[in-house]
Amino acid sequence: MTGFEQEFVGMALVVRLQGLFVTPEEIAALDDALSRCLEARASCVVVNWSRIEHLNSVAFGVLIRFESALLEQGRSYRNCCLPKQCLRMISMLKLTGFRWHIFRTEEEAVRSCLESRDDDEGGGAAPDGSAPR
Image (cartoon, rainbow, N blue to C red; front, side):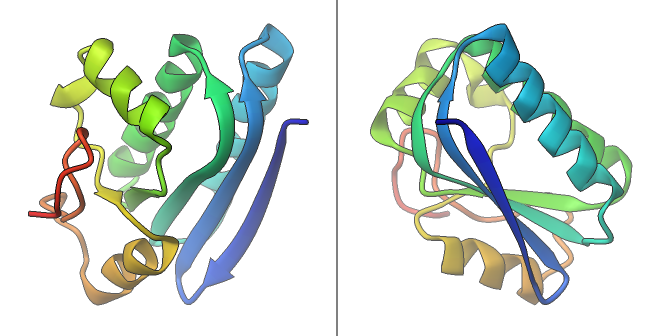
């Protein structure tokens, strides 16, 4: 089952993704849910990937477009809890040029949001899952 949960932690909006994001319907639901997040009054959005079973390259594109839109609005984002298969896909698709701002845990990502105004030098692990900078 594909699903989304949203919760504010301070001024950070945490979005928890769940399930498969492969079919056109699932990707449209992802795009719709993330578009609604753009309307939320959050200075930073944390996307938690821990319950993602699989997503395809189109779904990655939706996430990149969403996170780029946040930056255009002067807000920041963090990604956390990426499963190993997603980290591998980032490397395979050559998506390493995009600033992923990956954190191992949701708590670390939220704390990073709350502690800094992220000039998009933000911390986090490299796309290969190595230690934060």
